[in-house]
Amino acid sequence: MMLYLALVTCSQGVVRGQFVPVETTEEAWGSEASTPTPRLPRRRRFRAKLQSVNDVQSQLARLYREARSGSIRVEDASRLANILAILGRMIGDSDLEARIAALETGASAK
Image 1 (cartoon, helix red, strand yellow):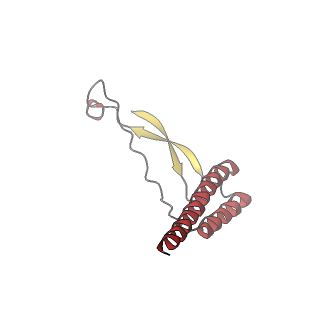
Image 2: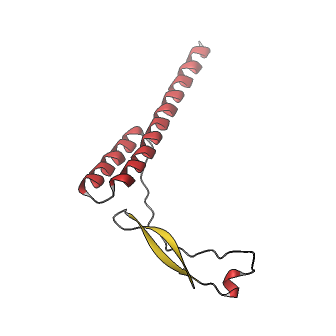
Image 3: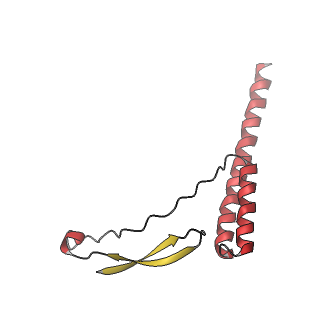
């Protein structure tokens, strides 16, 4: 039996490494050329409503509070905050693009 290192998200949102046993019998390997696919533990999925800049702002605030309280590591919070900031800029740009398109449509109709 082999062990693979799997990254697991705990209930507090902290990513930790966990060794997972994987079968290495002939059935698991299939053939000499293929490698086994490790069965990773199921992670809890987190879904957040991120449809507007205000939604992203509230998630950034939640992330800040969790990092400040020590619920998640600052390094992980920084990475997630960067992703949220990019997403917020994209949402703002798409809103602006829709407003410009509406103005152009209104101007061409006159």
